[in-house]
Length: 324
Ligand SMILES: [Zn+2]
Image (cartoon, rainbow, N blue to C red; front, side, top):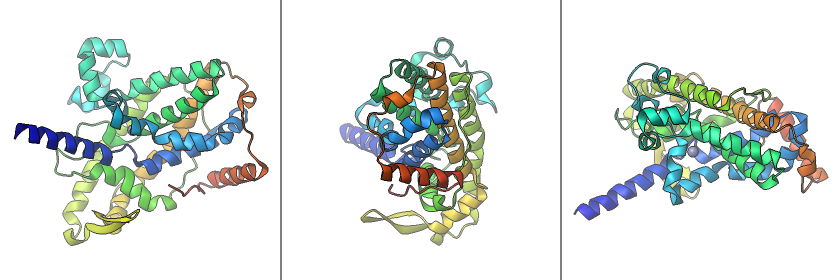
């Protein structure tokens, strides 16, 4: 019996992991790709030439979680595990060594290491730029983009990450996957240009803190909606690839998005510019190496035209990218 229970528990764990993929693959692909258009000229040629790789690897970090359990803590940071104060960030040391001395490494791993993962990937990217190591620059940029995007998801920063403590199970995927997949065609993606980040760790904590502040609204808006929305219209059978599954209905998603007053759209935009800013800052910190020399396969005339068109669309807040 116990064995069976363990099996069920581990199966449920896997299922939760599969369902709670951060931001949903759809958004990860999109924000990594659009971040390329926030970069200055000295970087954009290189990143545009490799935009497919940057896009495709946007979800590699999530995939790694299925085969490597040490990858799991990299994607979240349960700030409220450390203090029940309104702003737990006031008392959490930012430096890993100080936080580990205060809480132990085991506790940090248990509650997620997202801000330090961003810091680690950032310096890895700086080193890759300094070494002119094209492959590592691209893979690390993509991974760093993934973690920066994760930090923008409010439910990645709280213990109640799927509403499991407040009878709202499913809200994680509703907020970060279902809603953007359904409504993102209306979103404005223009997030401006990348800027220099003085301190990558402080910035990672700032992003986590700004997500944490929104977690209450993410949960309370759904609780309120659930109370007022006709229950027989809350779910619907929807198509997922070739399968038809029960999921939140389009009407429920639209009502939730309205109740959130555009929060998902704003978090997507913030993800885009912050990803670009991390890439840009790493390049500056590496001494601004000439990236044009690292372009192994220049874009063809047609590919270049397609990228320019995509860039022009981005400036208007739109994306041409629809294949995920
Ligand atoms: Zn993730």
